[in-house]
Image (tube, rainbow, N blue to C red):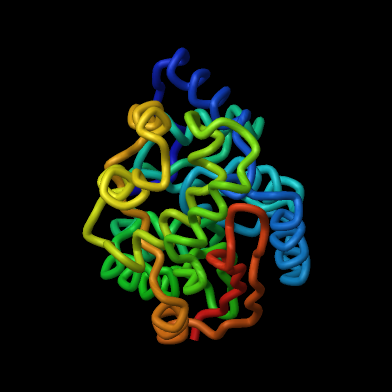
Length: 268
């Protein structure tokens, strides 16, 4: 795997994905408060202009922020179409790109900074642990990684999820509803039934909290995915096996509960 420009993809598909993402808000996308956390953490590193940064996943806010700090960014994503769409959102179509599985990323070149926003949570737990070990070896001596990561919120149970649904002021039949409660639902799924996909968990567990018509309207939007939210103590143990935790902050915001944490890490 080597850095290159993103391969050509269907412009119509790229534009559709870019428009959809542009209309999406927190907690899925980085909020202004979390962008400020990344900005302050990068600033504190005092990196030289042109320092090499690796972005795990396609996150337009982090692409733009890396450009503001004068970093030379390379994105790594398994989906070149999504990367192309996010570069359209960020206005950074010429950033370098590595396509493929993150665990296949080469050990060289080594990086001055590695960034990600909930990227590692897209991996199953054994692969997340393996990726943490790999990332530590991909950093130059003294370099850092900055991530927002998700963990199970022990306060989220079925009554708490039902209360969050009841507090929702919009219709419970569209993407806005799913996005607003995604972190809470995934936290509960990981706590109760990590073997189920998001779609199966809605059908088996979340569905009874909704009217049948509401669930029927949501079904076309559900996906067969399993984002991994480990317990916080397990996540910390996995991180500390390979990194010093320089900074750790909770990222509370509507729809996130206590699932989200901001980390600045330095390899051991």
